[in-house]
Image (cartoon, rainbow over all chains, first blue to last red; front, side, top):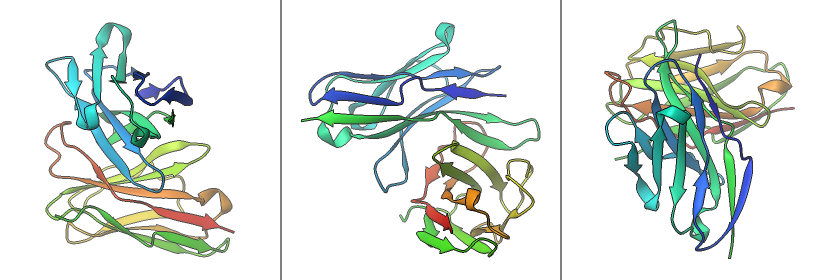
Length: 116
Length: 116
């Protein structure tokens, strides 16, 4: 079965600083990887996704993520954080279960706080 | 167009009562998913529908949980004899067509269920 680990529960950065959120996955086949963001009281919004091809993917709001198969990682980065980026970020892997049901398996999330 | 909508946005109920949660997917989306988000468990997959059919119901936490989808559109998640551990945010998502793993899931704002 697939699993996702986000080692950092909470990260605090200063506005304008760079950001990297870590994500490690476990999956037996080619992974389909996603990053979602959830602002307080809001639903989950897709930031970016990786299926194949270029291992560096660009997303919305200036985010990017790099797939590293050798490290089973899909870390999210942003060069300069804005106060509006404060939210909770979820990494997920998409896969079929043995019974044919497709699902996203999420990490526990990383809460990002931004200091003005 | 409109996104995924869910109703009610908040539901407070007494232990032992039945509740029904509704999801309206994006028009034309054939795949629909239910997830549960709770403090202790993070985001858990519950069930997915392709059209009106759910190939695998093993993600439902207990036999008190059931879900149906009619007309390839609206879905309802029913919890019978609610327990306090059912308190969570129930999220619904939809995607256009589950041909490959590349379909993006679009999430609704969720229904916050509180069982007293």
